[in-house]
Length: 443
Image 1 (cartoon, rainbow, N blue to C red):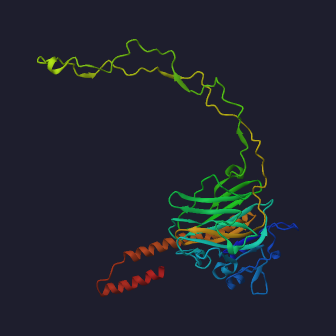
Image 2: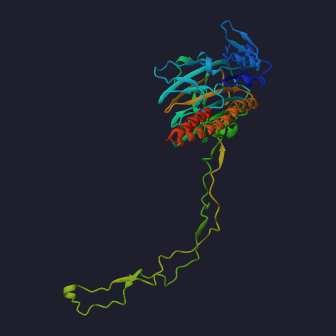
Image 3: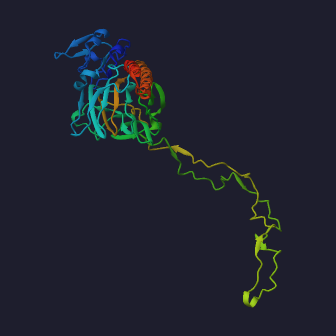
């Protein structure tokens, strides 16, 4: 199976991993991910020195470009050649622009460069084409890295897979796609990983809530879809969610339904506790809540003709015990909560092809971002889970570890800059000059 790889940290990776593929390929189209030597895709590479170090063979294509013939992988190095591989949609005239950047801090200034959004409150739409394939009988792995170089407030950072018949120049938010996968953030309430599948021209969202990363470090997102209809969503090579396609998406009617012909029996008692039928109210229980105050006497000068009929004020009755209620006991006839029996749903028919897509040929970024700055890199499509995991560790793992170290150094340097004081005399000026020099070196 071919591994479609787009990114900047790939030349050293391709030296280390060999990607298995089907020994025999079907003669009909679409091919199930043919080896790169048979593909028509033109691969662009950026730095000649990396080609020499990698030891990868190449063949000229007549226009100075090259097709890699080793490891059945195709790669496009972002820094120099990305615009030759990625097509900007012309559906709108105000699409946001991408640039190549490694961000404010990085593991390697060159290798960590990716596609970065640059304009706030803009739609973005770019895509890259590769040789059409289908995933029949094979695992499909979609993987890429995302870095929120900005303090993201609202914006999608997901990718989409499209069929081969897409006209890339008219890619837009209404364009039919097969799979949408990746982080999506909007405000404090929505910070999730979107996993949406197209099934019979209808889109189905995952029913589980998968939280995405929101910090400003690079993170690896991986979607695995298997022929046995199981799936995994991994973040930074750790399983964030897993399950079965039928269970976590509403592709099909439910396997079981409530039996309409089995109502709850009349004798069924769901009351766990009841009033004790043997408990009787005492004869002297009923007493008024308030009584006339026995300590108050009618005034001697009370004139009923002038003042009306005299009545003493009322006070709480010390004999009053409230409203009588029988004691509560366990119900000896308790049958439990009635559960309506289920029967096989006559409208349910299993579909073993839920995972299957034909003519997968385009990967694209069709997103809306409130605050720009997101960096996309290391796109990978493969049928080999182990290869994807190793590739993730090689590309993302190295970057993430170095980003942390570089971020820590930057924080220390910026703290020194913020804490430095203005010199007061000649000696202080010399000290300031030396201090500025050391700060610059650390940066």
